[in-house]
Length: 496
View 1: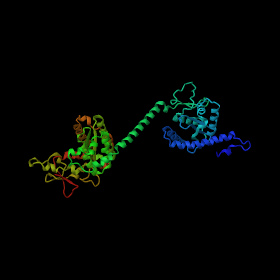
View 2: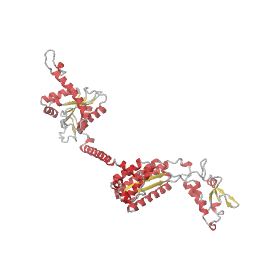
View 3: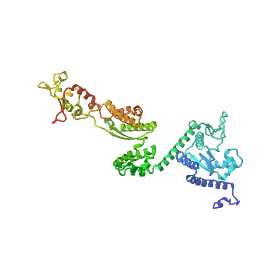
View 4: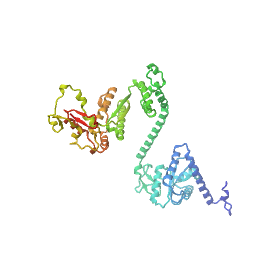
């Protein structure tokens, strides 16, 4: 070996104990580097987890620390064995390693000494897992050591006794720091008891199952891209039923379960353009016409309140929850195609204009009301009412600057809610009739307080707008008169 020249003493020509210890320590550093590289590519799961533990603890807790420093926490492992020992020292890891080896050769009673005697002291790999840059206290080191014992479940650490003499049989329930009772503490990890650890393992297991199912589903749904393209190629309006039955894509779609059908429909609306969506959806409707566990629902929401994106998001979430509830209760998958239209609010021109209604009345139905009490405050020409509408309303309403008869009014929340409820009720009735259940079993639960809050905050300053309820009052007061727009002045109206 290339180190033979360094091993021999110049005077005695023999290998000294100090040289052997130095060679053992140098060899340990080589083993640490080789083992770290091996753990990265190991096919064994628990070895990869140990490698990840080393990278995580060193990267997050020991940044700037010296692995050969005095105050460190170290780990002793061997290759292809789960046995592990965690310890802390203030005399450097290499000197502490020497102490363990000497105790093992002298038949020490610690578990780590018995283990090293059994497998051989040369097989131990001593690795630094945490180092400090500054001076530490005993309590700090013991807490860090105990936490790493807990994380790793170190099996070679001795279980000690508390001052009361309690027997700690469940090593994962209560962590003990060793056998030297004078300086060591019993530390209970209240947040990491056995129940919490088992719950965490169960959560990890479910996460792994979910990832595995997703991976298997990706393989199964990979062909859905192919079927999506085929569905959007051309409409099958001219194909007869027996021709469709022979097509492979029709046979495949008919055999799909509800979960895969939801994925296929979602892919149609995520991947294709508007033309492809129209063609594919029509072809799918024809294929799935006979299936009772799948229904298409068209929902068009028209209201001034849906111009806010947060309101749209709330409605989408509620409709999605409703569709999932229908699937859970009745076993029917709902493919809801929802369109939201933020329609404009009404103006004075559209609300007050009643010429179309009055023109349909017969001559005998028209009567003069210019002498009634409602006409007392209105302007008259030759004893009959002929007054400008905006000027008449301005006596009680303060219009903003530049306001005309074509300006939009601020809608009331009651009218908006009533309109939305009516639209959702129609959809619920249609779905109930389609799947054959009572209407109350298909009703939607919409979060109205949240929508009302967003509606109240939007739409500009309420003090600078005209409310729809003010128009309702004037419509009632001028119910017996004709309210007509003036051709040459589109921003004004006349009361006749």
